[in-house]
Image (cartoon, rainbow, N blue to C red; front, side, top):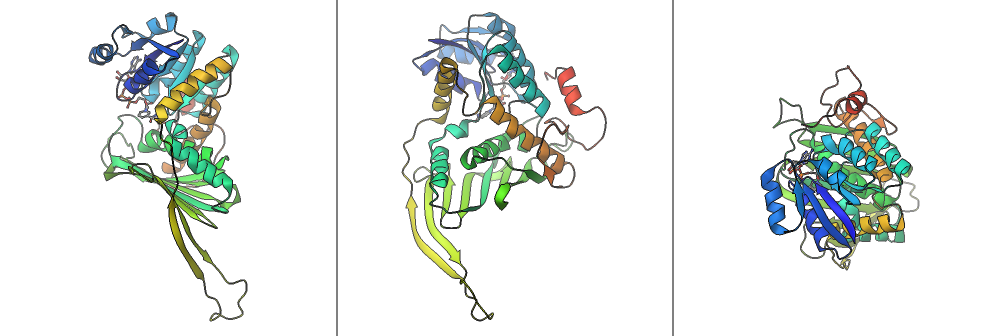
Length: 366
Ligand SMILES: NC(=O)c1ccc[n+]([C@@H]2O[C@H](COP(=O)([O-])OP(=O)(O)OC[C@H]3O[C@@H](n4cnc5c(N)ncnc54)[C@H](O)[C@@H]3O)[C@@H](O)[C@H]2O)c1
């Protein structure tokens, strides 16, 4: 039995608490939130679990692992303190507010010999795992481009834009299914509802991968309908993954276009369209968060690198920093690399203290 504590019991934390309470090889020992009603809610569900508004009490307890489900501004400080207290950590996405913070968390985990895993829940989704298998099997041919949409009405975040809130899911999915990282990124977007704060509520990200593969991600808190779709276009076949479809979440389309091998004249140049059958791909469904939580426990026990490790999350944050830089610079194409100084909380192009210096110097709790 691995003893686990959960810090942050807003929207997402109780789902982690439920899973660790239900898994047979874990014991949910402590829960923590600054708000008493949230503590009451969870302790009513799981009597016997200890509760506190002070995370230091959780870190001083005998729990071996801590889940951090607070807003991103506190991830770095809580994760560092938890690692320094000798705990394994499962930090919600995004791992941190900038590249420098993420690098420090990873280094601290390595120094202490503790697991750092990040809540990239979709890489534990059976449909995403299937999408990776299908792409790797080669049946779609060469992948030309991928188009992803993640939109709904809300949930607006008060301190980060929609790209930092929702795109970590899509970036982590793309890195996982393609098994490679993009080399550059650009982003455009709009600020409509939270104008005073300058927080984008809609963003269009373009990621450029090696071999010319292009991936587009549209994220929005300002759309009337919940849409979660992927279209993967290959040279042989095409795939559509609809996460909100009740059945047939993945369908493979035998569709394509072929140009004639040669043509001397314009008249001879005829494209031929292939429109074959659409075949649903069978999936065995398990709750992704349950798979994620079990994986966290297994990685701790075996000392193995999690699928959504801190290192993977760092690559996701490099993409987010490049996208943030582009978003604030009119959609410029940015090379993805190390720290760019465009953290989750930077909303203007102004020069001034580099954000990463601020992020590491001053705790930003509120
Ligand atoms: N993996 C997923 O699919 C998924 C889905 C939703 C949210 N999330 C992530 O989960 C995290 C939390 O999101 P949310 O929507 O639950 O936010 P939320 O605002 O609903 O809840 C955050 C909770 O943390 C508490 N909190 C803040 N600072 C604290 C501290 N120092 N000590 C103790 N409690 C503290 C707040 O009181 C609040 O109840 C974010 O990182 C978000 O991106 C992940």
